[in-house]
Image (cartoon, rainbow, N blue to C red; front, side, top):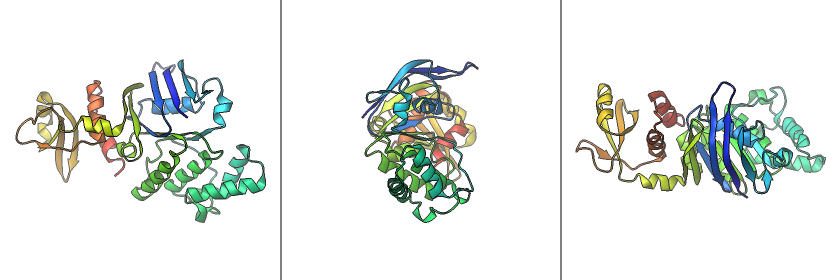
Length: 306
């Protein structure tokens, strides 16, 4: 099953164009939607989750018209939004059982089997009788995925799922997500480069509502091989280097300020060649499209998963 998005556009009443003619083909498996905060990721996710309407365009999951057959799409949709509420005084097993009833699983024996299996899959079996108010951030996210997986969905949407998780919980959550792409279309919307790099075989970069790049992350990285150079510099030298070279990112490493430069040839003997990664792909894509990446955003993109 494939998700096809064609020409989706959305402008809010305040004049912000959140989506600008977005066209994507998303195959079965993990698909990463990468972009800074405010890029339009959440608007696209809410549209695909039937929570808001675009101004123009179309979206289909297989033979399901997402915009006109909302109920049919919801039968096979699992959605974990960036922020979601839980009843803090309710036990995990009881709330998941309640959501299973709402999903149409009315047979008590069948429902118990489904609930037990999802708690096991999300590594929450030992916490099944704990109240949700006592769950950590990572446990809440895993419970959210358990709810999203009710009904064996063919389209799973997760919006900024690892933001705020500690490293251990992040790894546990990413391992869970990686298992889901075997039988479903899974869209991972995030501003954290490492989430896409570690999980996704296909990706797109979005900024200001426009798709700037799409394809295979490994191929995108390979395109930059031999073209990324680094050098440690003083803070007051950044402007001088930016004036004469294509500086794609600046970061702090062990107390030093290190710049990455994109160039077909070594700028001079003081630069060392760097094996490119998805961070370099992201920054070259943004700058190549005339999107400035300020220092705060660069730190978010590079360090959020650390």
